Image (cartoon, rainbow, N blue to C red):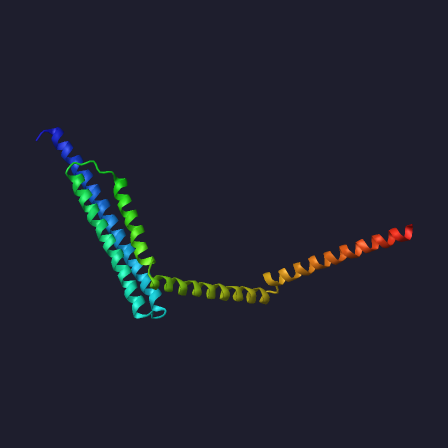
Length: 182
C-alpha cells in the first residue's frame, strides 16, 4: 500500500469514526429524549386516572411516536451506510430527518385527549402554585411591615379619586371667584 493510499485510508477511517460517534451521540440523545418524554407523560397520567378509552388513545399516540422515531433511526442508518459507500451525504440532511421526526412524534402524542387532560392538570397545578406564591409573598411583606401590590394599587386608586375630586373643587372655586369679581 502506498503512502498516499495509507493516508487516504486513515482519513476515511477517521471520518467514518467521527460519523459513527456523531450517530451514537444522536441515538443516545434520541433515547434520552424519548425516555424523558415518556416519563413526563407518565407523571402527568399519575395525577388522575383517565378513562380506559383515553388511556388507550394515549398509548396509541406514544406507540405512533415510537414508530416515527424508529423510522428516523432506520433512515439515518441507511444514509450513514450510503455515506460509507462513498455517496455525498450532508449532515444537514441527517439533522432534518431528526427534526421532522421529532415534530411528527410530538404530533402523534399531543393530539391525544390524554395529553390534553394532562396539560389541563398541569395548568391547574401551575395556577394553584401561582396563587400559593402570591399568598406567601403577601404574608411575607405583611410580616416585614411592607405593603403588598394589592394595597399599593388600592392607595393609587384612592389618590386618583382624590385628584379628580380636587380638580372638580378647583373648577367650582374658579367659577365662584369669577362670579364674585364681576
